[in-house]
Every structure is written in C-alpha cells, then in structure tokens.
Image (cartoon, rainbow, N blue to C red; front, side):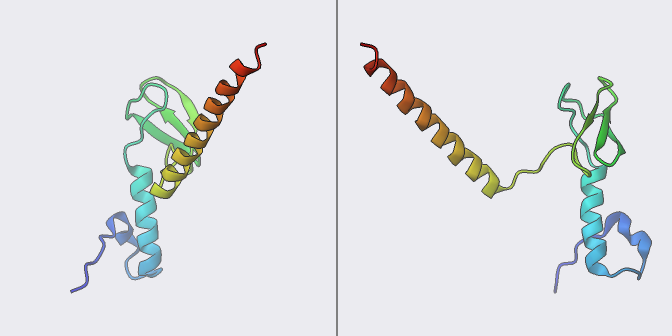
Length: 105
C-alpha cells in the first residue's frame, strides 16, 4: 500500500486544486508556522509580520529573512561545497604565510 502524506491545514481546500499543489502548500505552511529562532537572542518567539519581515517578541528586534522562514535551509551538497571552499581558503592562507618569512632579507 502506498504511504500517503498528511495534508495538515490544506485539508480546508477539499477536492479543489489537486493533490500535488496541496502537498506543496502543506510543506510551505509547516515551515512558515513552525518555530523560528531569533538570530539575535536565540529565542523561539519569532513571528512573521509580512513576506520576509520577522519580529522577535523577546528582544523586540525586527529583521528580514526568507519569505517562509527566518534563515536558509542548507542542503548537504551546499554544506559540502562550503566546507571545500573553506578548506581551499585555509590552504591558500597557509601557503601565503609560508612565503612571507623567506622574503624578509
């Protein structure tokens, strides 16, 4: 038997709009309505004011973010690419440090 994803709040649309669109909307609404962490005080009292505008109820900070969440969700491939870029930068800095003492004559 095929496992069916739960639609959550998109059940309100009933038989309209199709299953695929309802699943996409359900995923977006779960992300948007879920707990968001404030980048300043690290509390979870952040609420969405408008598209991309967020407000922290604890530290009273108003800041921008993504449309449906405060911060970007990093995929495994992006994280791997980031670590390789950091490694390249570190190796480049180390090679530059080794060259400097030789030029001090």
